[in-house]
Amino acid sequence: MNYVIEEPASPCIGICQMNTDTGLCEGCFRTSEEIEKWWELDAKQKWAVVAMAEDRQARILDGTYFD
Image (cartoon, rainbow, N blue to C red; front, side, top):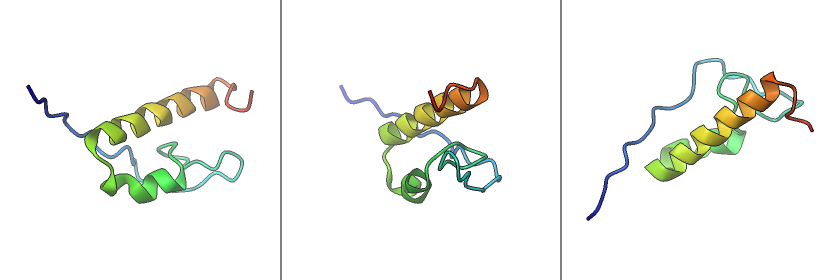
């Protein structure tokens, strides 16, 4: 049986500024490569990017990103 994985919405929130310390977008916490390739990724890859971005955001906010 084949299951269809629904694609996540783009994590972009319209704050498109790259942070020079982290190399991540200030709004969505993706790398420039992840942003550029977003529309080429399949649903599974997009979900992986969303998960990594959420993890980065949490680590930046709690101060453990550079540990």
